[in-house]
Amino acid sequence: MGYVAVKGGTQAIEESIKRLKYERLQKGTVLDVHTIEDGMRGLIDQVMSESSLYDQSLAAIAIKQAEGNPEEAVFLLRAYRSTLPRKHVSRIISSEDMQVERRISASFKDIPGGQILGATTDYTHRLLDWELEKETEESIQDWLHAYHAENRLTEYDQKQMSELSNLPKVLDYLRSEGLLQSCENNDLNPEDVTRKSLEFPSKRSERLQILTRGQTGAVTSLAYAVIRGYGALHPTVGELRVGQLPVYLDHPLDIGQEEDSYYIGDFQATEVEMLMPVTVEKERGKKEMEFEIGYGLCFGQNETKAIAIGILDNCLENPNTDFPSQNEEFVLYHIDSVESTGFISHLKMPHYVTFQSKLDSIRKTKEKASVGAVGGGNE
Image (tube, rainbow, N blue to C red; front, side):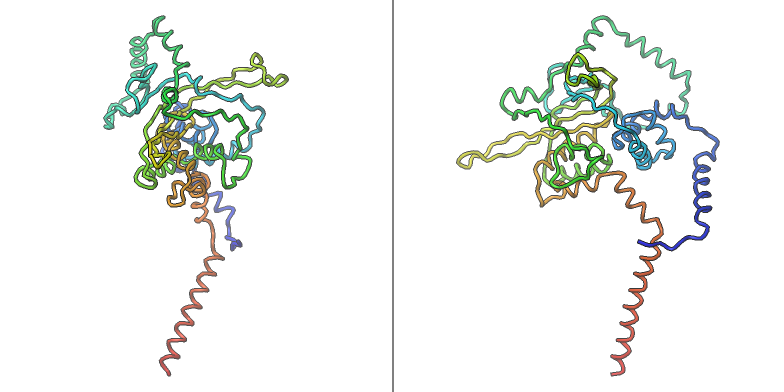
């Protein structure tokens, strides 16, 4: 595609960038990066998930640079991620090793280990808290001091906390009763969608990667469409967990030896296992209800997105051309934040040549129609 050169383009662009910085700074307030990192947990988690880069400090810088625009922050962080070398590959992470901070099931009231509410807005009144206008560093320190005093852990409490890394999976009890099919471990190397172009039909590892990198609103919207009628599916949360997952690296000279692996840290993740009721036809036309699984996992505490991923995961495992939500090409090509916002934004770029071509075509068509109308009148 060709473009007509814009006179004075370089200087105009430089001045536009200066104006952008002015808009961010004009009120004379410097938004501290550490303040964003410490006080905007939800936005940080969303940006890290959609960028597929777990680093709260970098996410905070991207959010500041993007003036709080999540799509632009994700674009910045993905661009930075593409410059990083891949020096190591961690060991396979088992979600059973999660140090649980929050764990609920909408399927069962009583689950082994109990329901752990943790930190959530689910039970708040969703009313504006006007006290936040008066919040100061001194008032925060006073509140934290009182909170720590109230929640000082006893020896028994510490023992209970240590057991939160070994909680059994709720769905294992359904499997033990034969109500849910067992799953075999698939230890094949997953495809990497950041290094290899997506091809259809896609593999599940590719689909899950794209879903967890997907724009949170787009993933949620498509999952909502599934529940409303595009597939007529009404799932139930079998188990939702939020917690810290450990990362281990093998010794570079002795790969595969358990004693030579190195613990390098934790990252917070949200994991969901969804239960999908399906009717299965058995022998002699007899129909029975069974459950299928939808799986979702993403960085940080992003529960709505993880649930939506679980719904779409199940939909894409059962393709159906009647519904766009079960069409992998439709879903996977339209949920990516950088791809979609990038293409929409490019419409602001100069399209002078192509638009003038369209105008010429319209003018010629109208001219021919006008000549034809005059000629018809003379006859």
